[in-house]
Image (cartoon, rainbow, N blue to C red; front, side, top):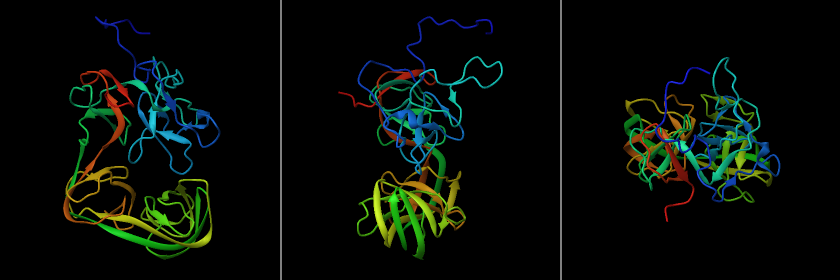
Length: 316
């Protein structure tokens, strides 16, 4: 350990990832078994004290990046490892290691990574690339510096033949449109709102133009014998790009854009994107946001870089 160079006038209230109270809390349930031990850190590892997303294909591997709202928060249970020589501490669970500490409710400490002070009652926002937390009023995500004028979103449809076993969709023939993540599919006997979440073994061109093969869907536990299936998704064309670059996982906002719209995949057409839900927006200025509003609330004051309390329960 190096020589101590800093002293604190007041003891730190907690570290990122610590419980902030003894109030009731709950972990996510794994799809592998009947407890949370089935989760594993994703290919880039999993950092403690940040928000996390589960891979949509297996609901097993967790990472600090993803599309839309996060699945949960990573609690600190001394499960991080020091993997760099002479490093004093480690906050990362290596790729493939077990993770039994993903919570979808409770009270925790997290670092304020925003640019302004956090205050009780603010909503917590999760960065879709890093999982860090920022705080702002409800409906006030932070722009990622990406915007486009004369942008459009077209409501697209697809038709294909396939079957579903549990959470795996097998497509045997495509009649029209695309088979892409973010598509909401329908067919006689298919659960309402079923969505394609990831491409498994299909052929792709340009990242999204998919053909026969297999895909993961949610909800799982479905059985659908081979038959006709239709799909609905949005095709986002940025038009004139004013700044930055759009990317998978970003939330979109603009006049006429449905609240909660986010990019799910790249389109086969360079520069265009697949979005969900399906909708129509004509010649609008559309902005991409790097973070997504979560269901968590700030419960203490904290300057930029300070730890603050967050809670899954709204202010009473």
